[in-house]
Image (cartoon, rainbow, N blue to C red):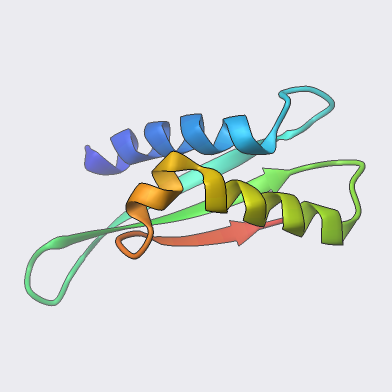
Length: 87
């Protein structure tokens, strides 16, 4: 279950950068496990950041900054496709 492990790790690291854990703030993380053309595996992640009370521009800036400083994001950059949903 590499996708489950990646979800747990990714959520733990990015959650600390995007949320104080109160006022409805937090994130939902989905990690997808796919196949490559050569029979290998590939991971992709989609993170939905829940940041009520902030303007759209501020939300986007906060999520981008968190993605830049997160140790897991740094380690996986270029290896895992990551997409963000910011409602």
